[in-house]
Amino acid sequence: MEQFRETLKKRTAEMGGINVIALLFIFVMGRYGLVVVGSSENISDYIHGFQIGIFLGVQIIMLLTIGKYRQAMKDSGKLKELYIKENDERAKLIRDKIGGAGFFLSMGIIAVAVITAGFFNETVFFTLSATLIFLGLVKLILKLYYTKKY
Image 1 (cartoon, rainbow, N blue to C red):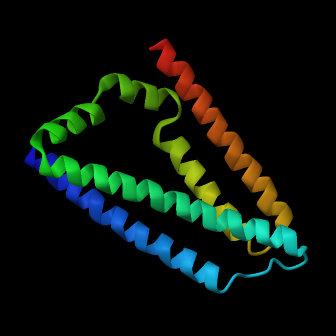
Image 2 (cartoon, rainbow, N blue to C red):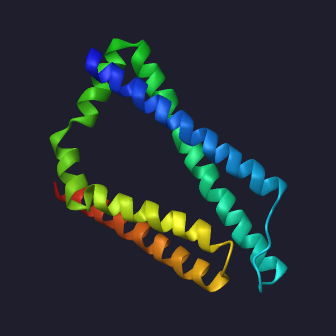
Image 3 (cartoon, rainbow, N blue to C red):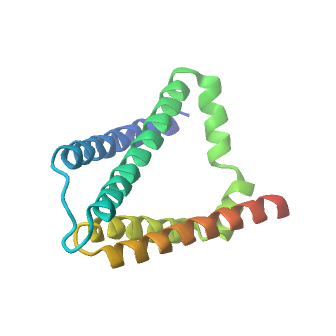
């Protein structure tokens, strides 16, 4: 269990770093919002809000996960429960069936591309946003399907 506790400490530190980056992005974008070249003010505001929303969502998820990990590190019962949950064979099978790390990585890369495209071209931004939403829905549907199947 000590090895798992160290793993959680490392994850907490990594998530803290991601939180700082997200917070800096939210601050910079809130303070110095950029206008997309060749787009109307409404479209530019929508893109700006979408970009901030992605980082705000990431930050909220990271804070909740950090809180869960800290509670688990303080209580050995919760630590054991979290360890069992993370090493559950059924959950691993479902993650593998819905695409595993590759699917998650591709969604992350597309999310970064959406944020980047929002600074340059609204057509590319909306196309990548639709792709990201579609991938998220596919992942959700597959997760629901395989959860009921297994």
